[in-house]
Length: 113
Length: 110
Image (cartoon, rainbow over all chains, first blue to last red):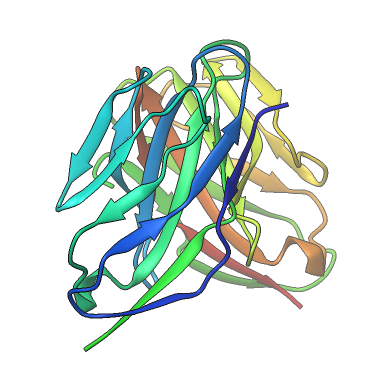
């Protein structure tokens, strides 16, 4: 079945550091890929998405590129801020069948001033 | 999270009690789903519905029932609560590739 694997956290960075959170997936066909962010005590918010190979999703300085050849969708940001501290979830949505989201286990990011 | 409303936000249950988590959306979406979130495990799909009168099981359906009598509402019922059902529950509705989550319901079973 479909699955998403994320790097384990927590990831601790200093403000203005470069961020990479790795995400790889297993799925048949060409799923849509997503990054969600969850701030403490809140629900999930869509951060960015990509629906086909080589698409780049971007939002609030975060970027991720859909790499079909490596089945990856790594999240990057050039300069993190304390306000970026949250849990980040990679997810995919299959193009057929159940069509629900399949989530990775989440990566906690802590940004220190 | 505009458009998907979950209640209650917090609930404490005793083992064996039953309860219903409510979910409503006002966007006329056909697809709705329930997830549970547990530490280190991401979100896992409990049940989903592709339209009124149609429901199906997700990854972890045991101990939960759902119904979909209207497009707007998709309640999740815990039949006999167990400590293993202590979790955060999220309802979601979807159109195309856009998914809207509710704010979550924190459930503790003691």
